[in-house]
Image (cartoon, rainbow, N blue to C red; front, side, top):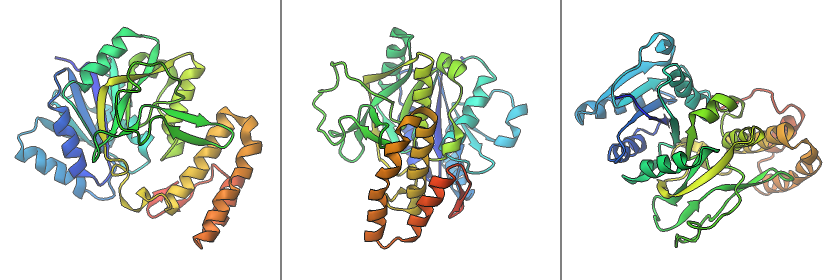
Length: 324
């Protein structure tokens, strides 16, 4: 039985979350899927822990290395662990799996799911039913709920303000009373924690843009799809519980970390240059708020970082082992 859906998880030093995510997926009522876990960890320990867990729990799995993928045959195991050559960011890790499965040509959908999420048994079925009912939608989003407060929404989709390069999640923090279930509403992008993507979309639009490394890559993908007349959708019956931040792990999950600041600023500039160049006139002045906040926090070095990014947004930097 060939997979109809490839479910892609990225593991970055978060094996406990990945185990819980896989366990929830294995309870799905729809069974024609294969889980691909791309390990981006800074040491082998996290993937080794997943392999050990897989053996102890009698998981049907195999282990591959990214360098061997061009010659590897399609595995039949339910779960495939892939050790990445290096951490090249969220989009690049997902693309490792997507490029590989594209060789086999036997799938209809790919589901990019954050490893710090859990799902319900009928979540995957709901996404497939929605996708089958509307072929004009290229990416489907899920109802994202707070893992630790499952009656509260993380969001049902995202809005983007091009003038200031800011994103906002629709319904964020609201108690889930079904208020977004049966109404039509505009969304600019599907939240990246759960993106259910059709093969047709990927064939026409291409894979995720790897230049972002972290943040805004899902917005870029959605915008590129819209340029080719693909619509984006929201499936309210697909409930996904998200821990929010655990998939990033380490110091970068703090909102004021140097890594987060770098990518937040840099990628807002890149998106604006690529899709909304007319808005650069308002984007750059909006960074005054960033400067004032860094003065208040006595993070003066980041003010210099801001100006370096503004002058050379595509230049590469290194932060705590991460190349930007």
